Length: 108
Image 1 (cartoon, rainbow, N blue to C red):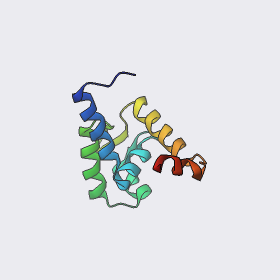
Image 2: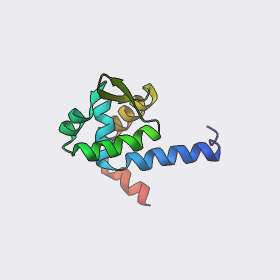
Image 3: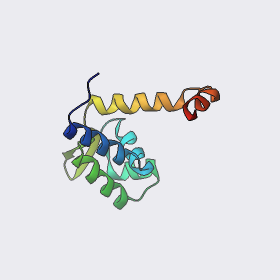
Image 4: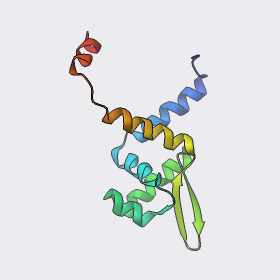
């Protein structure tokens, strides 16, 4: 697989940097279920509404989530199927059983 261009690499690195915050990651994972309000995200993640709103602003700017206005409320969901697949694959990877000897090989 050829390396992406530098500007694409920057977008990928920024995406992973944003997802490196556990609360922000919980916010995105909560949005995978479908459209959800800020208050419900806050309850699900255990974070304050103001913190969730702050994280959602960053995640929207990075095109990881999108908001849809319904009356006075904005409902958030994953921006697209790519985001959902990427996170589902990462969850599967994290939950896989692994052989501790694999870590020894990596360390050399």
